[in-house]
Image (cartoon, rainbow, N blue to C red):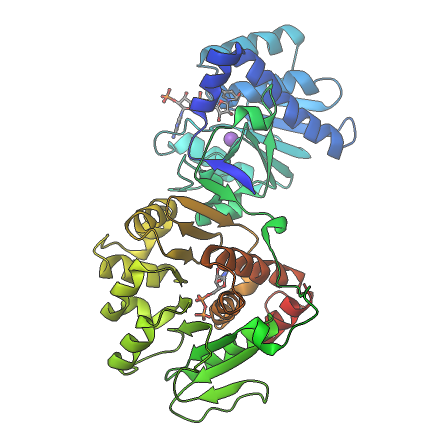
Length: 461
Ligand SMILES: NC(=O)C1=CN([C@@H]2O[C@H](COP(=O)(O)OP(=O)(O)OC[C@H]3O[C@@H](n4cnc5c(N)ncnc54)[C@H](OP(=O)(O)O)[C@@H]3O)[C@@H](O)[C@H]2O)[C@@H](O)CC1
Ligand SMILES: Nc1ncnc2c1ncn2[C@@H]1O[C@H](COP(=O)(O)OP(=O)(O)O)[C@@H](O)[C@H]1O
Ligand SMILES: [K+]
């Protein structure tokens, strides 16, 4: 996993104060890393339009123009002139070299957006907005320097932002690049070293970006095993029985030895999945909440009181009966609307889904601070998994998963790993990664996935 930071000013400062590096050195590396990216990917003489703003993000762009000049057909556009000290220094260098300037957006093969970076501190004025809109209309390969212009330091887009194919971000990964609403704008994210290796530049953090290696699938190595060695999951099915059945099928396909659906009514189940009316004696994990509807409160209370690893989903986030369980080691898998209900239920906040989506990290932190024993998995375009003071980001998900039933598969996967004795955090991380990576492996039309396809892909991981 890679470290992610709310801001990197303090990391830049460390470079100046402790390593005697200068702003100029850091900037030279910032610009060089974008130049390297372009040189690796594009032939000589390709046309490159660099749009540079008034601050140091613009200064990066002006330095980039100098580095590419002559090898590429570079044009530099400075709609606001150069205001910061470094921008003025870089401008002088570019002028002395004879880098060509343009007074408006010209069509080109590559556009590099260096308008605003981490210093975006107010709403875009009309000129900036119209520049960003025009850049977005251009047909070109689009590179954002540090962060797409229009995305603020929290990742919010309050008006419009530059649509990048790739964002080359300076020094370290930032939280802003992983807010759901930034996902369509950042493209691929690459980190540029700023004069020292990333491991030296970076300090401690509490936020991490998950990678494929963090997915620890439940492969079986033990030879002397039987079905009981891989747990017995009980999925509590409510009035929307399908949800529980989807979760049960996903859990079975992900390795749980025995899976039973608990329901008072008869359910049509595949032969390998059992039905019981009450919790099984040898139950090693419980999945509850999906499709629950109006289940008998006392019965739910009794199930939640069991000291058995549990994943809670969907309808239960609206119910007071859940509150005691939040002191325990339990995995919660809400989508944003359910998380808003949960925040209200817990007296943490009374907010709209829109407000939550603009501040996902903040509310995951708040919740996990109040309930440090729980693992919170907040679903979304970038799923956040919080435990105590740490947050893990799963950015592999795609809109292939935007279908009813995808969440039921996910809670089934988490429960499956709980039944197989993973701890709650590891179960949430591996299940979430397997869910998203399996969806990415799906080869048919990206609108066509059904839960059974997803389970099939998970079985092939
Ligand atoms: N150590 C370092 O510093 C390193 C920094 N690096 C680079 O510097 C970038 C940060 O530079 P930065 O701090 O100068 O801010 P930046 O993003 O250029 O914006 C500030 C300018 O934009 C203006 N402005 C803001 N919002 C606006 C709006 N809505 N509409 C219109 N104007 C607006 C704002 O105006 P003002 O507030 O002054 O009125 C000011 O002029 C960082 O992202 C990275 O690329 C790297 O080289 C590595 C080393
Ligand atoms: N655009 C998207 N990008 C990434 N993941 C997505 C996207 N849309 C949906 N998902 C994932 O699909 C699942 C949907 O869950 P949920 O909304 O609870 O569905 P349901 O309750 O119908 O099963 C979540 O894991 C979510 O993260
Ligand atoms: K930018």
